[in-house]
Amino acid sequence: MKIRIISGLIGVLILVGVLFLNETIVYPICIAAISVIALFELFKAYDCLKYRISFGASCIAAIANPICYFYNKLSIVNAVIVFAVMLIFLECIIRHSIQKFNQTAFMLAVTMLIIKSMGMLVCLKQMDSNYGLIYVILALSSAWVADTGAYFAGTFFGKHKLCPNISPKKTIEGLCGGILLTIIAFVVFSLIYSNITEATVQYIWLVVIAIVCALVGVLGDLSASILKRQRGIKDFGNIMPGHGGVMDRFDSVLFTLPVFYALNLLIPIYK
Image 1: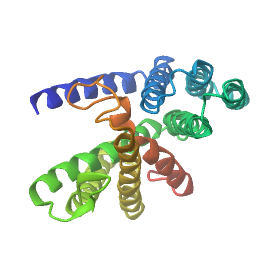
Image 2: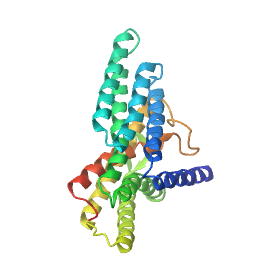
Image 3: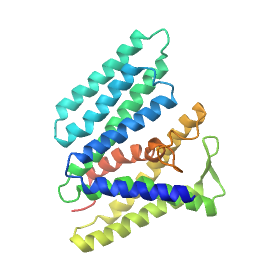
Image 4: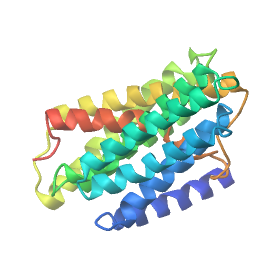
């Protein structure tokens, strides 16, 4: 537990530093680095690292995506992504005798998920000149706060298993605790922020987004758990002692980012 807490605090400090540099090229470069590490962990988990053309193409697209978004070069990033998909299929043809098509489908799926979801961190930042950074913070915290709330609520009150065959430790009580803590965190943060900046907060919509993101985050977490259970691995990596790999921390974030972005396009939280 001590190692987990220390590792988490170091991660938070690094995250704060990156967010502080959100107006510089450092921000998309860090997003690109996280994306590449996540791809490495996923390819490794499914025994796909040996397909070097596919992995290289995915990494190039993952690096180009946030940087091109940062400079508003959307046509370039779309071309790079399509080219990466073509290279993955090309290697499938070249290695058809040893490469199974389910591996090709997996590589395509995780490449698109990582690229598009992580790209939302730049899109959120740029969607509003006044509140972009705050949206990034809320989108990330919607997954991590829910996970924290679920952990403690499940530890102290958990009795009814949520998905015992996929994640034995998850409980319905933990899910409710995660949703509740997310709502509380969003409302308290927005109350403080609105008093400082005089921003108008759509509180009902804020609560709706908190609930939806907390639920979607569980979907992402369980999806990663299925992969780990079927592949017989405990964690995707060990880059964060006590937490595992990048994917162990970002599995739920990959699902909450696009949902948070879409809901804010529909009705912005802050005005």
